[in-house]
Image 1 (cartoon, rainbow, N blue to C red):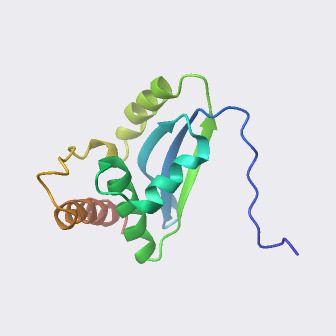
Image 2: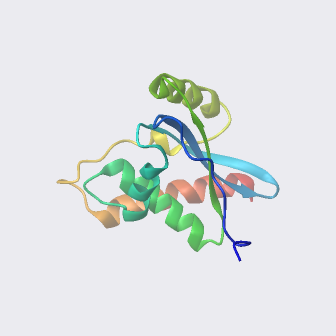
Length: 133
């Protein structure tokens, strides 16, 4: 009856550091590193993609665009005590090999538009995809 359900361990702490990635040609391609004190509840912000929350919008748009391209976006996460310092270290390490969405310049939601920022995210993803095509 529950064969198609996915299993996750229930959290023991709300603090996590996580990496978003997809696979292409057998390679895991990491494109965003984050941290939160809301555990997996944070991922709902990426589904809603509120423009007034720039990180939520950019990450959510990247996920949506990758899914439109029939790529499965996945999450690796780890519970931790100091999620911010672990996030910083992981960004440093992964930036050596991968182009991360974390490095896109921030936007001011009062001076830009969703279409302009969506275009920036799509160009970013297209550039990442071209490296692995």
